[in-house]
Image (cartoon, rainbow, N blue to C red; front, side, top):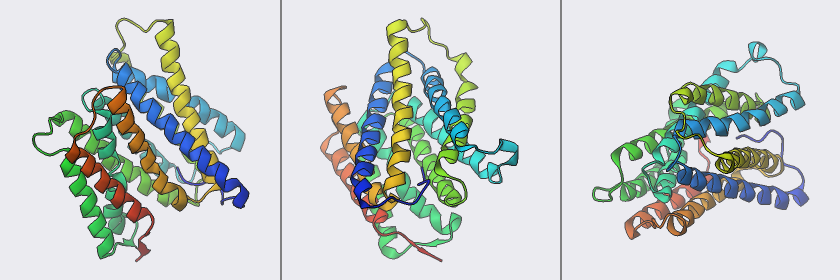
Length: 295
């Protein structure tokens, strides 16, 4: 999500960082609870419940900001592709969690900033220096430590997570292209509607049997609210703090995923997987603190 406004003065920076960390906690909690629910309910059903709640927030944002209709939106093609990219992320990530340990799945997903840097010379016209390429290679070496032969990670789940990472990299590239052209809340709103339509198409073919009872249904709805709340917190954070400051904190999400995987699902990553995660985190932080130059 891009910042919809310039950062506010220094007193609000602490609040912005707190909002961002709270958003990461909400996202990590959503991922872990989704993995738990996937033992009982189909992924397309959980996705439509998620994006139905998120789209409700999107409708509120559109009404609040007085956004022009889709037919008059000047960047609607990029917004459409951006929504399709994020919808692919959500669908592949959720489905992969059926088989993948949460920590390893999240680590593979966090290679997306490395993929974005690798794509930026061709898609954004940015120059990537030797040190940036070295960081990209180090990050991918970390991913190979996670998905190495003998790690017992399922091939289908690993492939879906790789698709999710590539799709999220394209999503980030499109977000950069739209920066300064379309406000952040507007990008979010239109993307949410596209994701809702994408996830609604397969949902009727994957209805839960039996349908969740009142308690489970309230829990699933609460997760959708949790995800929507995380989006609100992200918008609030980016309104107060520049993206370059917040980006390294993203990797707290991976640490939380490791904790959930270890203590909730009793699936701690092994030593080589932890080393791979450390490489991915180090490469990602290096890259976000050294932005590539324009060509």
